[in-house]
Image (cartoon, rainbow, N blue to C red; front, side, top):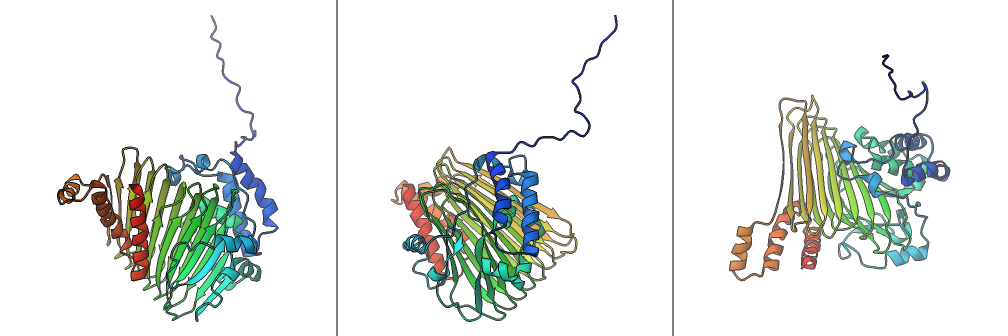
Length: 454
């Protein structure tokens, strides 16, 4: 009896595979051609936008099968794409900024942004001597020479959140700190998002710190309770030789917000950088850091303090690229997870073949305050040089019962004992802030979050 073999008909040669896109992906792809005509900038900026859009159109939103987004599935989390926020009216700006907000008592130069748009009339009128502040639309339209620093770090350009911001960046600021300028007051970049209807932002701030300059930058991000805003902000630091930068960022977004943020920093030689990211807000947040040592003998401290409750999800993803010899990096991230919240830390240190004498240390520590909390840790090292000192580690556990017993045996109620231990735990990350007043403000926020737990 003959044997008859059967098989499924093969796909005809040359047939195209149909890509299935989510509603959010389709909306982003359809929105770009219409938005592009009204977005500021030309020439090289248009090329950057087109390249970023091509990446989005080709890959779509990242999902859990993309390794660096394994724990934060943006495709699943972002079901719809909110429309870009329109430039707010003067009344909207005044109402949004009417509350005191974070760092209200600090002696700072305030630079205000409302719904992702620079609000010069609501900012301090006179910039300090040696500081130039230009709205991003004006800088893009004029082809400002500092725009050459946009997208200077290759790994960032391949990142989905950064690419979305680049494609749609509509407003923000370009700030230049002149060579040799030592600012006595911090520059406070205050971002406030207000409105009952969900919107998206794509703000970009570029800060060029010229040779020998010194500056403290504060970022505060505040949001209303009512709307699920989709926020995507980028801060790029171009730091020249022998400059000093102190940077503090606070995520206090509304409890419904999806907040993506990216810090891109390129350091010259003999640079000192301290940066701290504090997270208390947003339903879902992801803070990315792309740090490149481009010059020798530079140092960087990259810290984070994350406080999560209820069902919050907070992701910190870090890439430190030692591309020059004799540099030092220290990364310390502390996370407190309560309720059914989820914390994520992904950190990678890369040491290039010629980056001898590199000293890099990375640590993530988490405390789970409830049985339903989750923490994901993934520290990595990629070392291609042989004369280096590098290490990484991660811990995750509960509060030490012996220490709790010690404090309670001396008359402290358990909630107060827990608060003291958590203050010490999270406070270690905040110690990187040298300014006493600024550090006290952050400690006060930490204490407020801890008191609210009970």
